[in-house]
Length: 407
Image (tube, rainbow, N blue to C red; front, side, top):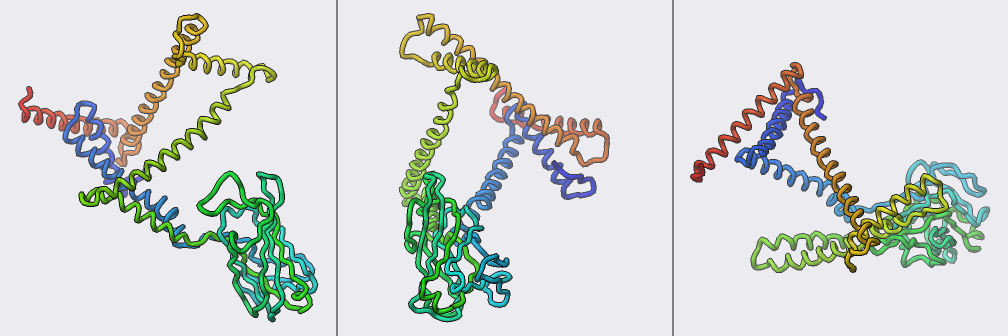
């Protein structure tokens, strides 16, 4: 829908260009002509340019370039709010990120349990954890544990690692979920894999336990800015190199490289098509088995009609035996009529869709006309422009036929 553009010359020019292109394309109703071919190439060029823009904006930039060159992270805990835990207070002076950090005394509270954390982490590669110690404890460790509940198995699972305390000040721990953690149970979902990293189950709690050495040392630990991250996917750069192989078709000497890229693309397409067919046909087959008994009367009648139509149409396509016996011939004939009825409905929807497009174009040409005149005069103006364009198309076709010697 165009805004009111009576006083805007630029938008008025855009409107009249659109109206000219719309009416010029409709000259194909008379015959194919030079005006139609010109506007057809114009629309194809616009579609290609717009398609390239959409591919860059919606695919290459966010899905490929940004994912490859940036680190995607999600906040686990930011420690900006005061905790209601014994031995833990909010410190607004010593902090790493945000408005504050938690000041934890393991001597008073050896086990710190966080239950109010995001449950959905997606498919993280590693964790970023900031800790600060006021003094070093060389023989001390902190046990960091992620508690999960797998909805697939309905069982608890955990990821556990040990954090050394032989440092002073702030330190960032980068914890790889595959290498740095000891896994108990099944912490990953079964339904999906994302690259090399699987989707993590629902996180229920985070636990930080100080060993006796840390407790006896009386050390004070600050916690701030815990995140789950998906790191830089540098290997995605090879996708760009592989995509460039398609353009080697323009160089005869290296054209064979394009067949390599095309074969891989066709193999991936065939695999995804088979997967899509299985995922689509399976639920359809399952939903086609509808109960007729033991359900409410209206549902039973509806299901009976559905099953009858399904069996009749399937019988029509059953060619293993001849359709001579009435038990086969009658349902097959009924199935053919039902198919014809369905095709008629589909054709009617197609015609209705074409009329909807035509009505939309009329709305654009007449009701959205920027001229401040009555609707009747707008309609007459559009008809005059259409008549002029059709006349131009007629002269173009006639000139081409005379040039070819066709009477």
